Figure 1 (spheres, rainbow, N blue to C red):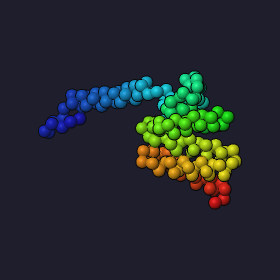
Figure 2: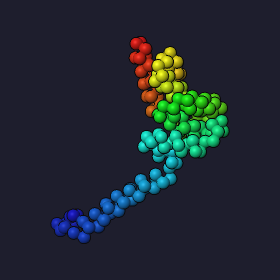
Figure 3: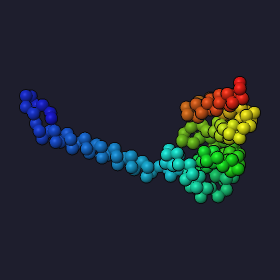
Figure 4: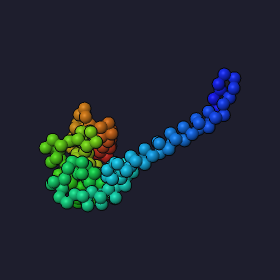
Length: 169
C-alpha cells in the first residue's frame, strides 16, 4: 500500500495492483500479437521447427531460380538442419546467385557468409574436410563485413575452428 503522510490508503493498493495486472496483460497480448504478425517462417525458425519450415518453404517456392534471398535463406537453412544434402547444395547455389547479384540482406544483416558456412558444415558431416575447410574459411572472411550479424560471425569462426580440429591442425 502507499503511504500518504502517516496514513495508508488501501484504495491506492488496489489501483496499483490493477495497473500491474493490466501491464502484464498488455505484455502478454503484445507477445501473442507479435507471433501473429511475424512471417510464419520466422516463427518456425525461432522455434527450431526445421521440418515444418522445410514444408512451408517448399510449398511457397515453386522454382528456386526465382525465389527471393529471404525465401532461400529459410529453405536452405531448413535443408541444412534436416540433413537433406541432395536439396541443400542446389538451394545454396541459388542462394549464392542472389547474393552475387547484390541481394544480401535478410533481417537487416549481410548473409553473404551463409552459403559457404552451410556448405562447409555439410562437407564436414559428409567427411570431406578439405572442402569443408575451404568453405568455412571463405565464410569466416565474408562474416567479417560490418553488416554481418554477430551470430553469423560466431558460427563462421566456430566452423573454421571445428574443421581444423577434425583435420588435426
